[in-house]
Length: 290
Image (cartoon, rainbow, N blue to C red):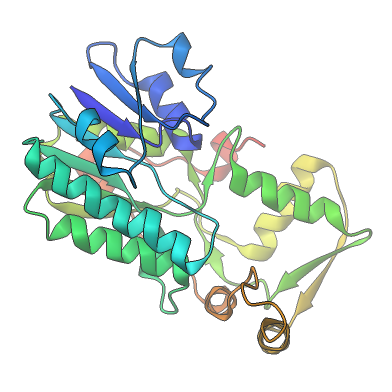
């Protein structure tokens, strides 16, 4: 029996669509979640939250494998810690109690950054808890995930549309990124269920195309049929602005660490993950969807 946390999220919805019929699946959902989609599938719904030990204990009964997708992506430092760190801590403790055999977790490349923002710190702490848990684990660190319904791509598209005539780009636009197709993310998660090679390994999960930030913005703009002038904003100016506004706004939505990472490439050769899972990660031009 497999328990999936975060089943109503972007990756979760795509996973439910692809998971083999032979697998028996339970989905942990909150009472506020939109579960209409899940009711179309042969899965057992269990109401609960990773921050609530009692509901998690009930969810983990008779469970062999946990696919842990649930995470907070936007929030305050305290919220990130409560959900991403303490939620994972709860999950691990109750996995031990209920003799769960394995945890397959979705982390983020944000956990590998030189300058960790609050989200990246919470994902790194979550990873460390899993690695030290004594459970068999597999951890995947995807970069920006694209595919139909991707919030990351929606946010970029909305940003491109937002300002008339221009697109402000933080930094020189030359950093290299490797966006990954959600179908590849789902594929390696499913393959890991029966893949002994992946036990107690952590994989960076990036796409098959290395592309500059400038080129990626042009790529998305072309799909939107939008032509605008890109204006590069110096990182130093943005950092100074954040410092100034943070004096007046306690929880300013953009951190200095996040901006500093605009100088850091997000790349990997993908050799190990492609070998271990017999997969060729897709190129952006093969599979990109808005």
